[in-house]
Length: 379
Ligand SMILES: Cc1cc2nc3c(=O)[nH]c(=O)nc-3n(C[C@H](O)[C@H](O)[C@H](O)COP(=O)(O)O)c2cc1C
Image (cartoon, protein in one colour):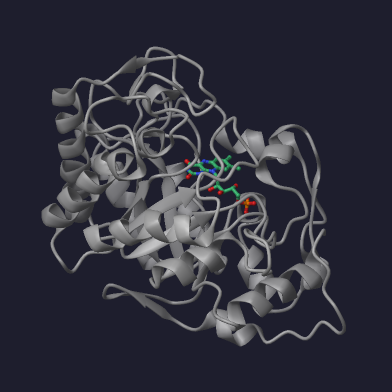
């Protein structure tokens, strides 16, 4: 692993297994399952296998599941994965029940790809990498999509999800508005940071008014964008604060600070990672993510590099940062994807039992196309 851990590794893991409350929802410990696409049912309906997958992670020690990015029910969205639309409500309910029965909580990640897909719609039709792949939304369409988030959050609450996470990261729709490289609008939705944030802030305010004051709303955010890595749209702590403060005022309860490697210092002069700075600059609950327990980030992993476990030393680094208050929860992606009981192994200090290597094909194989359907009236 690239971060140096000086001296003896001393683990005080217990603190990671204390409950934590986000706007009235108490999760049993500090481990979240990172949102990850699972399977591709031909009818876009989450299958029994989705529910079983989520249950297995909670039985394996995860306290909070954040679902895979889930497309909302609108002409401007499309993805090959499970969706939030009426035929899928029972399937999603089964996922909620599976997680609850196992003692966990589950947030639904609301996702809109924007102009990332060919012919899609976004602020300017541009991907974060500046590629013209789609079309710009009209102002009326932006209004429509803003309401779509509110309606979808209302549906998530009615289905029984404990909260929602708005995907505002990785160069997807909300982030396409935030990021100057993909937002070239010259109306009130584009221009300086305040204008580029208008869409995201409108979404948050409308979601808050739709779900009420007692329901957690999270937002995933990132400096990096799909196809554009090692950039810093917020180059200083003050810029980060200017970005986060209005989101908190609009109604965000928890930030999910997505980094490629959780231990890499975000700004000069401190070893705080991205999550540490997000928590420090926002003052609200924050989830860290990015190569926890692994030596290789997701992009390298998808590019074919083998991800190796960082074992006891990696967990010690997680615990060190958590214990000094850098963040409140830790989201685990690939490690729990291939090893559902990863958290329990960590809790029991069975570091030698952790899988030593994760292979690209194995990670990819969890999201392959399958053609099964949840039979009618089955839970
Ligand atoms: C197969 C796979 C699917 C993913 N799908 C999503 C997604 O739907 N939404 C999202 O925000 N991030 C997604 N991610 C990113 C993960 O949530 C996480 O940020 C990333 O894998 C880094 O965590 P890790 O290093 O623990 O794997 C995905 C990652 C993988 C490996």
